[in-house]
Image (tube, rainbow, N blue to C red; front, side, top):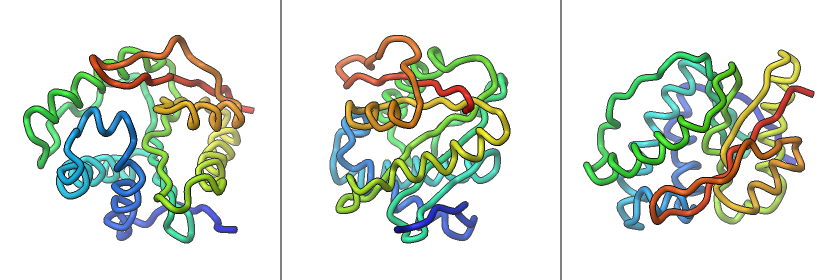
Length: 190
């Protein structure tokens, strides 16, 4: 059984590689970044480096000891974030990402909470309980602080996992134009 710990800033390239592999075939990722090779070598590395840098600076990045799964947790404080474009993304990718992020922001609860973003397990290790262990680690931390958590499920399998961990649907699912459904989910502290 592998443990979970906070990622070190020096590990961000390793954690980015975990997320690149984990989200290569994710339906929502395929909608934002439709080219397989582009997703693997350009778009995902640029996106995850940016998100991980922000996660380490303002929130928490957790990783399994065996470096097979990772999650980015960011705080929702009620303040608007940085809307600077992500360097390395093409204009059409930025447009689709902007549409998706806008839809997500419109549905994210306004009250303070911790947002679990990009919970990923590398192929070959999926279905072994690592995602649940990873999320549970963060939930234990935020439950101890009395703080709620939020996330978006991008597949029926992930929604089932999150429901087992105590998350409940927060409004109806939504879809970007021509994209797959996304289910907002909320969890009060236990």
